[in-house]
Amino acid sequence: CIVHGHIIAEVLASEVDDSYVFPIVLEGPGGQSQEIDPKTGKPNGQPGCAYLVWDTGAFELLISGRDAQVLGLPNLGAITVGGVTGSSPAYRSRVTLIGVPGQEPVPVRLENVDCVVDPSAQQSLFGSRYAIMLGLGLIITGTTPAQPGVDATVQGQVKIALYQGEGYVAPKAP
Image 1 (cartoon, rainbow, N blue to C red):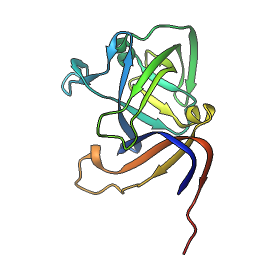
Image 2 (cartoon, one colour):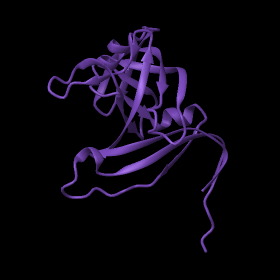
Image 3 (cartoon, rainbow, N blue to C red):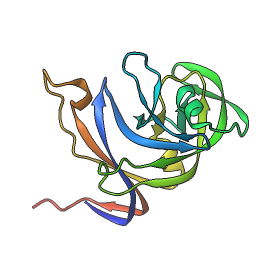
C-alpha cells in the first residue's frame, strides 16, 4: 500500500493467547522498563522490554501498576477506567515509548505520551482507538498463522505501523 503521510512508528507484534503483544522499552522518571523474571513474574532489575497488548477497543495507553512502579510514573490526577471486566480507580500520567533497537523497521521514540495507570492491571496495553483519537492512522500487515507445535510466543506475527497523514491507497489489482 502507499501511505499518504509519513510513518512515525512500526512495531512487530506476536500472537499470544488470541492477542497481539509487542515489545517496547518504557521510560519514566524512575528509569526504564525491566526484564521480568519468569519464575517470580516480577522485575529483576535488568533493563528490558515491557510487553504491551495491542487492544483494538481501548481508548488509552494503559500502563500496569507493576510497570508504573518500576518507571516511577507520577500521579497527574485520579480517574476511573472501565472496560469489559468492569471499572477500577486509576490515574493519569506520562511515559516515553522507545523502540527496541533492531526490532522495528522505523525507530520509535515518543516522549511524554499521555497514559493511564491502572494499579490493578496485570498487563500494559496500547489501544487502537487511542491512536485514532491522536489523529494517527494504523496499518496492520503480514499476518502469519499460528502453527501447531510452535512456541506460543512466536505463533503469528504482524507489523503494526502508526502514521500521520491523509491515509493510504491499496495497490490496484492486476
